[in-house]
Length: 171
Image (tube, rainbow, N blue to C red; front, side):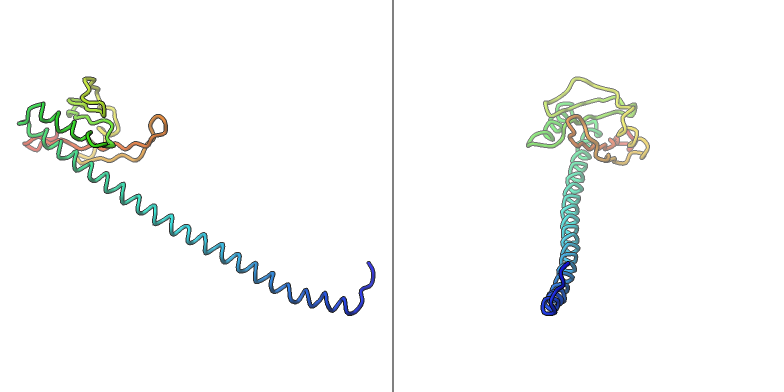
């Protein structure tokens, strides 16, 4: 390596002394900005998650309330089958997100079933379903399942509402 003149050495040292603080300051500022941006993004994601969670909770509460109303109508036993059918069909009108609505007796046998296509004549035994077991276990309290994914990875939630007869025995 060739020997540098004194003036060149002084110039290199001055450049080093002037550039080194800029590099350190830049590194610290970039690191600080990165941390602040991550914190801001996290805060915004939490706000969006809270908003969506509140919307889903409200939606489920409204559907549970509507289903409770239908179950109370059915439990009176004073309504004709056509009135219950009409009320169940009304739940599917107006672009409802409901896909299937079934009234099930204490043994798990479906009594009435409606789908988004209308009244179904196919009645299944739901005694082995998680919703039926949960409502039975919870002694007649409402049950809202966790989100599960059906075919085509569509999320679905099961809402089970007990039907009480007018003498308040579980049906």
